Length: 122
Image (cartoon, rainbow, N blue to C red; front, side, top):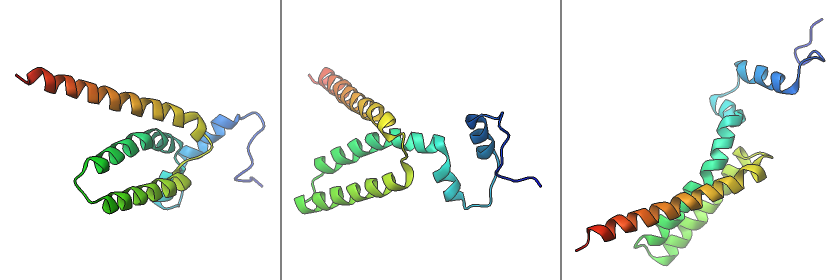
């Protein structure tokens, strides 16, 4: 009898993962998306970019302080829930790179935009 989960000894773990990822399953589409390793990695990398942008936009808005606080708390809860669903054990390897790139891009964008604005002022 052939077992579905039994694998030959000579097949490596990475090969088995690739084989399992390539086989379509009967699960829901959102479950397949949450199990995709590349999507999870890109979500972990993109989270600091999105968080920095949302925090900056909320703090620069002309809303009341309580509304700003409520939006920031809601954003924290959304990131926390997304972290529980999407992030995996590679988070500590990927998060520093995401934070570095998000900080670098935001500072560079701010400096370039300020340079362009100041160069056109008379």
